[in-house]
Image (cartoon, rainbow, N blue to C red; front, side):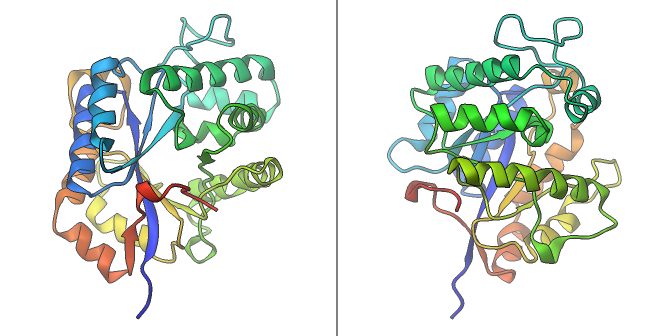
Length: 286
């Protein structure tokens, strides 16, 4: 009998909006996801929202809790003196990408901001995160990845970090976004390994966020070829005014939630010989 592959199904963006937070907690309670990453720079991660999430792990650990490092707008830095900013907010992702690729960011300020977000997680939850990743994959960018991994190694050395390279069998040349993430993850994985930081074995979950997307049809391909220890990123949520004011990804979040709550989700997991990793066992990566 083949042993099921154990994977991480991580809901990003906890803290972005009340509707996102509620949907993520419901899926954790249902046993449909086993990880979520928290945006300490987002406006809806007060004590009540943090306590409601932390309580789900009282007694039995239901989900790994990570830090979703945030360095792009419309969110604001937690540290003083961070630059560059626009109207007091981080730059948009495209601008951040251009500055990182041309090595025009300030490494010291990146390090301070990432460390500040990590310490905010510690202050809020009373413990360090199980893992760290980045909003809009910002952790992979040149300059950012050095600061990100440096802070992880110094403050949370037992945490694992998210790399976004796909399994070899899942790589498709037509998927430009996936190819970019594959390339950026090469240097990221190499540096993480050099520092002794664990990473997930492979990544899936990226797709084109368009009105035509049908998540129920898209999800099964994320499971194909995903190895043990692989991670699938997801973005479930309920649409509310707070979400609409902060992010363009809205209705698809409800579509993702509906799929993970449906009977189709466990059926596809079983069909592919995949199960969710046990967060209580510790150590999410290799």
